[in-house]
Structures are given as C-alpha cells and as structure tokens.
Length: 431
Image (cartoon, rainbow, N blue to C red; front, side, top):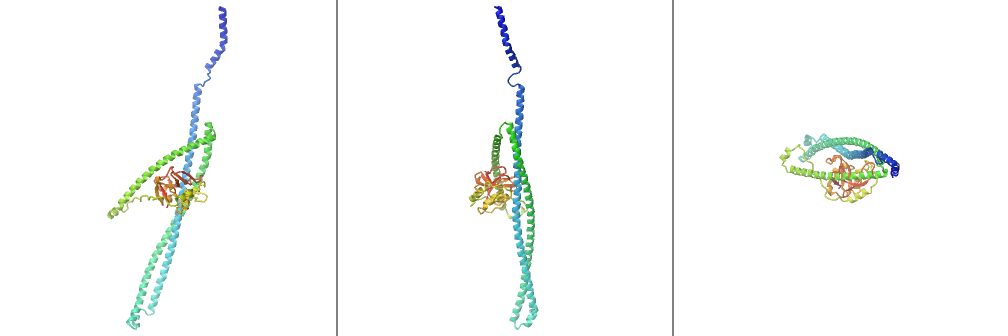
C-alpha cells in the first residue's frame, strides 16, 4: 500500500514538472504587453499625433499664405485699374483743355485783328479830313457836319468796344492756356502713377504665381506624409483635407455674414447721424454758418438705389456666359477678365457704362443694403470695410447670397457665396 502510493507520487511529480516549468516561464515573460510596451506605444502615438498636428498646421499656414498673396495681388491690380481709369480721365481732360485753349487763342487773334482794323479805319478817317475842325470847315450844312461827326464818334466807340473784347479774349486765352498746362501736368503725373502701379501689379502677380506653385508642391508633400503617418491612402487624405477646407470656408462664411451685418448696422447708424447733422447744419442761420466757416462738414448721406435697374437680367446672363474663362489682372475680355473688367463688360452689354475699377464702381453708384441686394447689383470687398479706398474686389449678385466673379490668379470665372472676409456693408446698383 505504501509502495504504490510512493510510486504514484513520484510519477505525478515527473508528469507535472514540465508544466510547472512552462508555468514558471510564463510568469517571468508574460504574453500580454508590459508597462514598458504600453508607455512606448503611448509615446509613439503622441509623437505621431504631434506630427499630424504639425503637418495640419503647415497646411493651414500654406493656405493662409496663398490667400494673403492673392489679396496682395488683388489690391495691386485694383491700384492699377484705378490708376489707368484716372489716367483715361486726365487724358480726356487734357485733350479738352488743349482744344479750349486753342479756341481761346484763335478768338484772341481775331480780336487783335479787329482792333487793328478799327484803328486803321479811324486813322484813315482822320487823315482824310474827318477831324472835328476839318469837318466843320468842309461841311456844306449843319446836317453834313452832324453826319460826319457821328461817323467819327462811331469809329471811336467801336475801337473802345473792340479793344475791350480783345482784352477779354486775352484773359480767356491766358486762363485756358494755364488750365491746359495744368491738365497736361496732371496727365503726366497720372501716366507715371499708372506705370508704377502696373509694375507693382506685375510684381505681385509674379509673387502670387510663385506662392501658388510652392503651395501646390508643398501640399502634395504634406498630404503624402499625413497619409503615411495615419496609414491611409493619399486619395483618402486629399478627400479629408478637402472636407476640412470646406468646414473652414463654412465657418469663415458664417463669420463674414455676421461681420457684414454688424458693419451694415454701424454704417446705417453713421449715415443717420450724418443726415441729422446735415439737416441741422442746413437749417442754421447765416451768422452761425459764418462762425462755422473753416470747420469740417459731414459728408452727404449714402445715396440709396430706388429699385432694380433695367437690363440687370441681361447683365447677369452675360456674366454667367463667361463662366470658366481665366482670371487675368487688368483683363477686360473677351477671353479673360479681372473682377472689375467682368462687371464692367457685363453691364456694358446692358447699355450701362462703368469704369474699369472696383473702387470707382463703388463710389460712383447708388448704394444698396446687403439685405436688399437684387440680381445685377455689385458687392465689394476691402481690407478695411470702413474705408472705401481699400476696396480691391467686386462681384455681381446672381441670386440671394450668390455672386459671379473673376476671383484671383490661377482661378476662372465662377459663382460663389458673397459672404467672405472684407465684405463691404453696402453693394451698388448700376444705372
């Protein structure tokens, strides 16, 4: 009995020994991750997340730099458009002033000839015996004397009149010549300004083109890195970035809408205050006006449009027919456009003349509140929405909240939301 028990115990121990050994090995080197493995994995994940965040920040920075370059070009191109429009105006003024000066000089020359002719007639009349004494001696009767004397008096009076006319003509000729000289000087200055603006615009266009090329190459590289880090395909990552960009644009549009509404409310408040001050000023006494001489007066309130302009539908249809044509700064068709070139040609097709300048298209037209915009109205964008001198872009409304525009270098004529950064609180209604 005891021997069999001893033999079973020995056999059991021999049989279980390998299991204990295996069990002992499992305890020393477990099959699940150790704390060190967990810590290392967390560190790697954190590093990867940091890399992803850094790449996303770089992509956002690339987009911001691209938008800044496009805005810089837009401003420079508008500077040139405005300078060119002003040069055309100065050239027309110089041409008109020169023509007026030539006419005034011709009138003065005729007046001088008339003075000489009258003087000659009077001299001949006197030398032929038309002096007062000769007239008395030669007169056969008192009637003859009166007739002769009247002739002398007429000649003398005529000479005075002609001399006065000649003096007036000389004043006009001198004044016209001065105005012509000033107009020519203004034309020369405008020519220089236009040339400088063109050079600046070309430099901005070259810089924008370089940023576009750099951004495209860099974005391709960054997206590939993101795809590798996140173990996705480049195509999938591109789709993700497009989605993120769409979210960013939507947020920017909402912010722009809120900013435009706030700016419109502020502009309406200022306009009401200016109108009140203007009304008060106009009803003041002449003595009060004299005391106020030399002080700054408020500007006139914004001139509001009365209703949709005839031809607006035609202008919109024409602008939409240009969809897909490339943007070109200073372009006014038929194959490429900049922003104000597109709106100018669109309204030209409807019989309304506009200057090739977004700033001049804003300043020269009746204003429309953003809530009252109708198809054909123009909307404007500026670096400072309280200062119309900083306007650099214009688009044409085609439906509520949507415009057609020639946007920026590298893009084509397209439709887009009117709500973006820099939207002016008023549009305009060409007429």
